[in-house]
Amino acid sequence: MGDQSYGSSSSFSTSSYKNVLCKCGEQPKIWTSTTKKNPGRHFIRSPNSLDSSKDCKFFVWVDEDLGLHRYKSKVNELNRENMDLFKENMILSKKNMELEKENICLQKKLMKLEVIEKKEIDMFMVKVLFGIVLVSIFIYFIIP
Image (cartoon, rainbow, N blue to C red; front, side):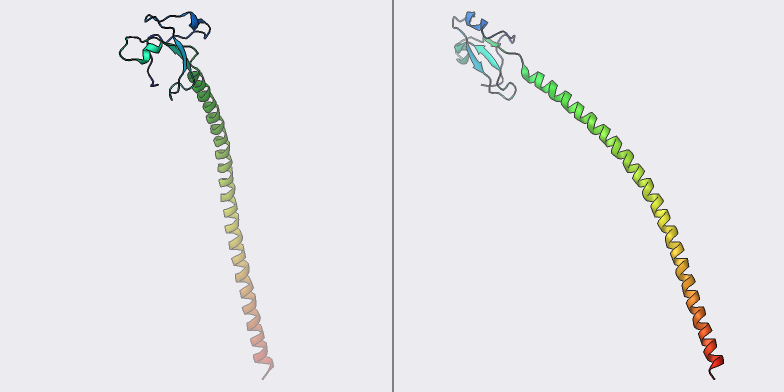
């Protein structure tokens, strides 16, 4: 069956369709849609509506369009998920900014420590050189 709708598109209960006669004189039969647009929906139509040579277009949905309800429900669910993800993203963005600030502070501390360490190494080298000079002077003047 295609995505075609014939005649009325109103809905009514399955028990009331047995009292309906098509204008072609045939009693409609209940069918189940296998289309992508209306999967699993029930409808009634006259057997003559399948014959293109007969002018019968009787078609009525038996059940409510649950697809629309499912889509609305899915849209609401996706909107809730989207809002939850948006909130989570905001929290993570804030945390990321805090971590970036902390990282900058730690980099500044590291640079200061590296400067201090370089000064300490320089001072150590001065002391070593001073010691070498003292030993050289001692050796030069004490040992003839």
